[in-house]
Length: 423
Ligand SMILES: [Zn+2]
Image (cartoon, rainbow, N blue to C red; front, side, top):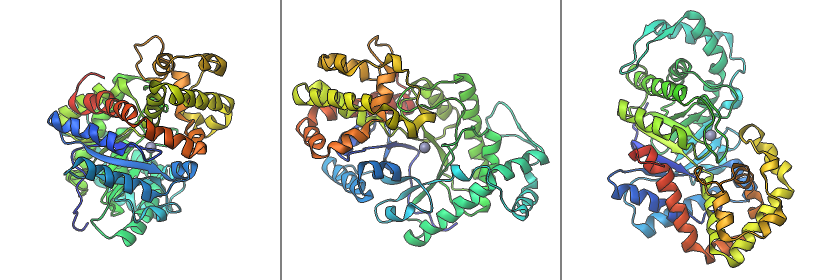
């Protein structure tokens, strides 16, 4: 599959910076990891949808990343991720990105050509029967029917990924970018057995995939904790890692292929399971925890008091007034209880401390309000509409915001996932 020049590294964190003002504060969290003895590579990701909502260009992500790297003297790899792109949207990311998350979730379940399915099933007969995965607690049993059914469900999506991969390849050249294949934005989770079969198809398609983002079981709501069976998650996560190791060994996929966890941010309760599985298999992980930096900006503004606090309250009032339209695109990934949302008049009277403790993701705090947090999480459009007014206040309160951004990324994400510290 050609020379692979770029290396992502074993541990990497995908982080979003909606308004391109926090790259330095985010990179600072990776420097803290380095100080603690671990290289965690930063990947700045932003989807086409985010760019459209904010009205930004992919080049702004690259500029912010480059500037942060220069300012802080970061001498390790870093990347810019064209997050959740498709054939239609990849084009504008070619110049500025070197990591491409090829999203083929919409093609799952689409019919593949009967001849393609036949060809795949025949070519992968070797998967039939019992497969023992190194280090795993249980073997995979794959029947002819399993293989055929999985091919029917996913082959069209993998073919689509191949198409998108080749279009990026022709623009960027081999070895100049890292391809991820993502299937997370769909309703049904993929089982570890399905993941193994999908990886076989990806290898057949000639995609040198470096990170793969399945949908895991359980709910991954935006900006709040995991809802689901943690034990089941851990069992499946371990099997996914074992399946990847098998795929690397038997299908000729890149040796550094690893899972990409699209967390929707803040899946604190499964971080220990992720960490244990990484330890158990000596495996790496790419953790995407994109959206919460924007909430740390709000927390920083509120903490600053004065105009910052006033703006944070105004953003809440606007988000409250427009909650239906803000929530609609995210209906599957948010669970807001309208009764738990404080009225804007009430929030208007809040102190800095009341605002930040309602929003800050500290579940042990009695003031923490997950409905308010989710509403503000999807409310970044309001700040985007404010334009300079919002950005000026970000700049005026840079220090307090940066402290919150770094602390959040390091203490609540990097430390528990990669270092096994407590969240
Ligand atoms: Zn995703």
